[in-house]
Image 1: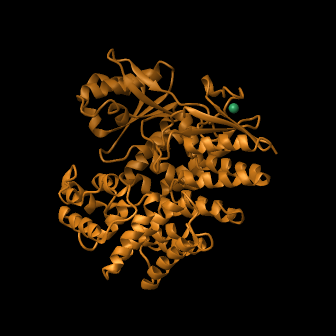
Image 2: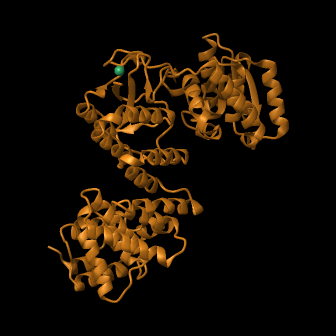
Length: 525
Ligand SMILES: [Zn+2]
C-alpha cells in the first residue's frame, strides 16, 4: 500500500522549481502546494502511523527532492501534508518520532500540529488528554518566546479555540498579532466562531465580528454557522439575534454563502414559531416572487446625499490626497470650469469609455466610441460633461469635434487621475446627476470611512452607467443602474430579503450585479 522506495524516486508534476518560486514569494504557503497535496492523497491518507524507518525515508526524500525543503522546515512541511481531521494520529505519530530521535520539534512544526488538532476539533469534541496536549504545546511556545510573530499567534489561536475551558487565552494573542499586522481572516474567524458558540459570550462575538469587518476581513461562513447553530438551541433569543445579524449584514453589505443560506432555511424549519424562511427569486423590477413585495429602492435620502457630497467635496478633496497627481492650478481651473458650466445630467469619464472595449485600438476608433456614448445621452436631451486628457486632442478631429459641440469637455494633464474629477463634478451637480464609467471607485468608497461608505455605494449604484459592449454595427449597449437594493435589507411590509452567493470568497467584488438567489425571511416577535 505504501511504497517508500516509490516515494524516494517520486517527481511531482511541475518539479521543484515551481515550488521554489512560490516559496520565495509566500513562505507561509509551504506545504499547501499541489505536489505535496499529491503526496498526501497518495501516501498519508490511509495510515495512522509510520515506522521510524519510514518517517526517516519520507524526511530525507523530501529534503533531497526539493531544493526549498531543508532540515529546518521539513518537519513543518510534513505536518502541513498531514493536516486533515483524520490525520491527527499520524501527525502526532510524526512528532513522537522526532522526539524519539532526540530532536526538539520547532515552533513552526508545533504550530502545524495545533492546526491539525483544530481540524479534528471541527469533526468531533477533543478528549481531555488531547486538550491537555494542546495546552502543553501552547505553554511551551509562549514560555520560549516573550513575543510571538503573527503566524505563531495564529497557530496558537487555532489550538486554543479547540479547548473547552481555555480558549479565552487566545484573546491576548489576537492583540499580539496587531503589533505587527492586522490579524488574519482565519484568526478572527476562529475566535468569533468560538465566542458565538457560547451562550454567555455573544457580546464578545459581536465585538470581534465588527472589528474584523472594519479591518476589511470577510468573516468565514463558520462564524455565522456557529451563531445559527446556537440559536437553534436557544429559541428565546433567536429573533433578536437574527435581527442583529441581518442588520449587520446590511450595514456591511455582506453577501453570505449558500452554506449559510441553507442553514437559515433549516433554522426556519427548526424554529417555526420564531421565523419563516423561504428560498426566492426576483421578478422584473425587483419584486420578490415569494412575498410579492418590491425590494426597497436603492436611492438615498436628501439628507444622506447632503452628508455624502459635503464629506466628499470638503473633507476628501481638501485633504488633497485624492488629487495628488494633479497640480493645485489644475484643480482650481477645473473647479472654476465646473462652477461655470454645471449642473450636468451625466458626467462621462472619456478615457475610461474610449478604452472600455480594449485599449489597443486606433485613436480614430477610440474617439468614435466616445462620440457614440455622447450621442446616446444627447439623444435623450441630457447635458453632458466629458472628462478627458490632453492627449485626446490628437484623436480623430471629426469625432472629437462632435464631442466638443455636444458636451462640455474638460481635459486634464496626462498624468492626472480622472475619478476625483468625475466624482466632484457629479456630486457638485446635484442628486439627480449620473456618471458614466466602469471604474468601481473602491478607493474613494474606502476613504469616506465606515459610516459613509455604504451611502456612497448606494449613490454609486443608483447613478453609475457603463458600457457593456459595442456591436458589429457600431451600436452601443449601455448598462443602466439597478434601482432597487442588492444587499440584505427589510422591505416595507417587514420581511427581510437576503441575497446569497455560491461560495465564500475572501475578496468579494464590489460590482453591482443582481444576485440570482435570495431568501425571503420574516421574523415573528
Ligand atoms: Zn419576499
